[in-house]
Image (cartoon, rainbow, N blue to C red; front, side):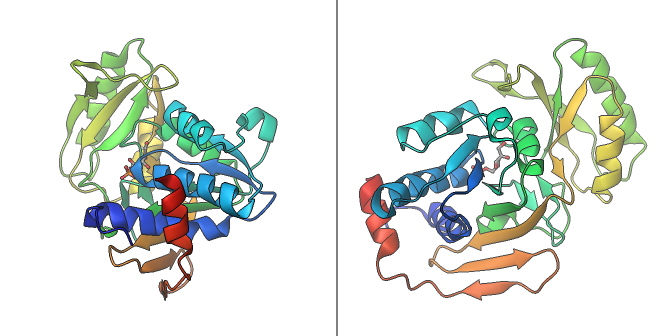
Length: 261
Ligand SMILES: O=C(CO)[C@H](O)[C@H](O)COP(=O)(O)O
């Protein structure tokens, strides 16, 4: 385990490394977005080079696509791929049912489309992402630009009628300008504190004209790999007890990291 990485980054690397073994030769794979997913893409590049792994990937963002190309991973569009065997992606929060908040990186729409066009979604994360109740992380909601303020006030009405704690809404900014997603939309970050009924809230938000998608992923992920800074990983399942994995790998990860540089 590389000691120059900070503990959180080591945990993300560990999660990506152990989840990577769900990927087998010949699979069509969805690649997530964010710093944990970036580790996955780099490791897959190394595995392809060192072990000859053959996959076809679909990226969930322009950033991931650029990294996959840099790592010489063959990519295609979702239209071309049709259906995927597996998608591996990060998350901002996950509860015990593997209901997720995603979209911290702004890619929630493509991430949800890709994950739900896959036989299976595996989440990779550091331990801080596992929470008892969702909502401390602001919930991203993607809205079309046209009339976004009208959509925002309808969203506010919904929050006032729901069981969430807060109702502060901030349009996401980057470098002093509104953040625009790869699909050309804005993101509203909903500061809710606590989300008691994620499924109900997602349905209510999606009823607002102009809301394209929410960062609530319910009944999509079935496995979550939580990496620990020590290099150990804990596997969480929707229908089973968590399992801790022993990490001895005969130096394989070190070889991958040497390749990544
Ligand atoms: O949903 C996402 C991007 O839209 C990411 O998966 C999420 O923000 C986690 O990011 P990171 O792995 O950097 O912590």
